[in-house]
Length: 351
Ligand SMILES: Nc1ncnc2c1ncn2[C@@H]1O[C@H](COP(=O)(O)OP(=O)(O)OP(=O)(O)O)[C@@H](O)[C@H]1O
Ligand SMILES: [Mg+2]
Image 1 (tube, rainbow, N blue to C red):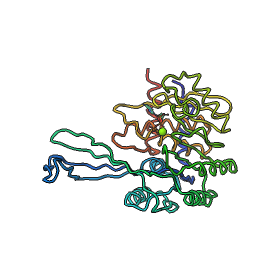
Image 2: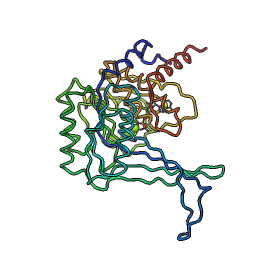
Image 3: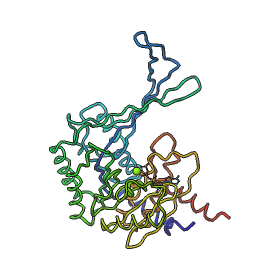
Image 4: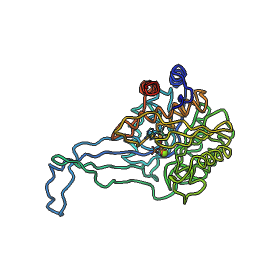
């Protein structure tokens, strides 16, 4: 295996240490992940309906989508993490803001509107005498597009805070009715073009090909969807991936980090491309949230003036840390990233 893009331990320490001096914003879709634990051994058949109720004995909450990206930035000890979005005026919004604020994220610019419903994914987990099973998820989503007045308010908020930010992460997670609408995206595209010294980094599930002058982080499927949505991502050969990544990079005039799950990342930058292998992981694995950890570490490294190759290697390490964290989206601290670097070096020097 090659060195992680020739990243020395001293460089890695330096990149992680300067996170404290960075101010990074996250704009986009935020979600609340809720875990409701039901103890079915306490359930008694309802008298009114032929159903066994789910007696909830414990609930836990965490931030999803952009909120998880922001949480990853906070775990990386970024000096200031600021969130921009629109939440509903509801209990889910209150809990989500509370969860984010508890991680040290500045939620004060978040707009709250009675016209919106805070996205939430509620995961009921049923426990029996000696078994566990998930019930169907309960989803709260928005059933109509973001109102133009709220679009403008969101754009204005970002505009006001931008001078105080080194980097802005865009999380465009919803298939429809999210906050990164076409006008919001265009406004962000204009801001990125007008501020080439700031790092705009995008994660977009459906529309990665529509962002300009920004650093892109698509996975295989997202990159492919910009060109040929009908193709199966598993069928793409490496040279074709490189062509897609290079084309996207030429289109945006910025580096592209095409993440490849267990195969690491394809970095297209400076007119060339390089595959950086994934960092070592020890099963059991839970890949949920790998992308969020990746993009957060990527932004920290880039805004800290790492090269694209160094940034890809740091992001691979951070993502590997989180996928070993089971039953949680997880985030990676500087100490955990350094330990993963040591593991990689040990594996490489082993006979
Ligand atoms: N099995 C694995 N082993 C090692 N690293 C992994 C593995 N899966 C993912 N990663 C790391 O996580 C990064 C992001 O993974 P992936 O390409 O699946 O992103 P994603 O699809 O955006 O993830 P998500 O499902 O969280 O949105 C990879 O570039 C790699 O560094
Ligand atoms: Mg992703």
